[in-house]
Length: 239
Ligand code: C5P
Image (cartoon, rainbow, N blue to C red):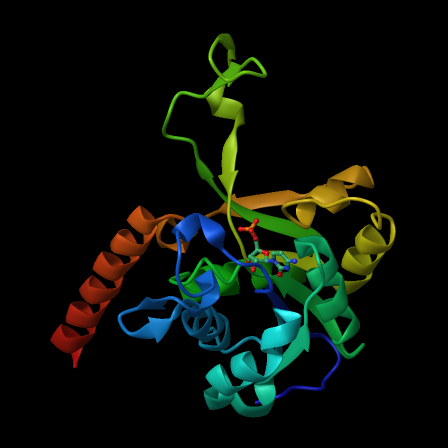
């Protein structure tokens, strides 16, 4: 249901990229897991939290009609707008399309198809509790090293305990996200919290979820199929 009450939450899904790292074939957001397109999974994760009044999806400008058709099951609670030439621009265009009544805004990667709705809820709760920018993040399992510009020689081993692998949805007080994007017209960041950091403002970290991984490579697609089929089996056991 579309909520227009002040204080509600809206979500932005930038999905206007080509997703070339998955190899040849359909754009990434249109690839399927368990026969369901990745973008549909991502929007379902948001909507099934029961806490989102509106989702605005930024689609490839030449694919808006197709993406609208794909997301028809969500009715008025999902709007599709043409994206821009960078991720940052796509988010800014979607942000422009969100009515002022929404005070909390999430930005969620379409590629994090199997994000549990509980993670969506946790991010919203953290913003509602007073953090104006919130990111979910996981501890880093691998040892991380810095390398030289050729990528062939190690220059340093980084202290892993102070590193986190960042996921989405990222959550923001609306006014802060608008300010961060307005201040960042010339840059192309890979996440929106980065724009808040550039303003010198704090970004709060909450625990991420392993199943909120980004489907980027063919291996990720295999992993996603496995996670999805386990969920299916669990749902059957509880039916
Ligand atoms: O290509 P990359 O994985 O960095 O893209 C991250 C996200 O930003 C993807 O969901 C992609 O669809 C989106 N994007 C966008 N507009 C662009 C480029 C990327 O919405 N112009």
